[in-house]
Image (spheres, rainbow, N blue to C red):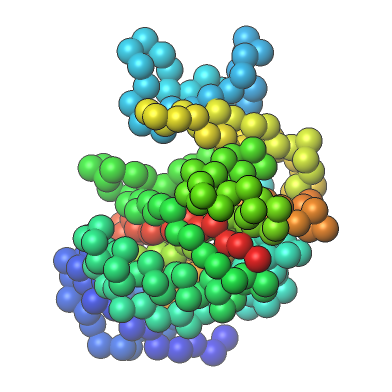
Length: 304
């Protein structure tokens, strides 16, 4: 296999506290000298299991009320073969599979510590990327972001549960929430919700992101789940295991790579491929001592 030099970015140094070494590592070894897991892997994924009492499933986004469980549904762990996107990125598109892999995407934002800088520097980059890379897009509204870190004191950790961020109901509610004055007009046209996901301290060694080809996911696999915020209730989708689902991950994702995850698409001609189940997962090949994954996902309404 031909290898290329791997160079750490300033963001890597900031997040790890380690100096940036000379560009002498191959693409299959990270800056710690640890091998980056590549190729297909079998891993255990957490799928949706219905509440035992038959009640409507829910999940509290923040602290739940006293005496109430954070969520009332269970987990069904299943071993799944997860194939590597590396080397076949061009085979997958938003319209056909509900995800896309983009390479060589630069960013002026390095540390991702300041909310103000993320919104002033990184947001415009994400908006430009979506307008350029999403066919038909003519307007983008970024409505939130989440940074996840694999550290005990992190505000948000990687989510190790198969899910979809939106449903048809919650997507329409997002349009009304973020574009209230134009909502009824916008809802008559095509609107999509797309997450832009990237690592902050790549290459990813631990808790990579797994995605399922939406074309292999049946509607019957998906279960609406109340997503309860302090001031409103949204909706996500739990995902039941189905052996027909095909799963992928992008090995050793770098800071210059992006995964576009389509959570909803109002275009009925691609409706069956308009939602991508995804989850972080524990790769059994992750070397001991590998740094924890840090990532950011920006969520966007994409019109047109």
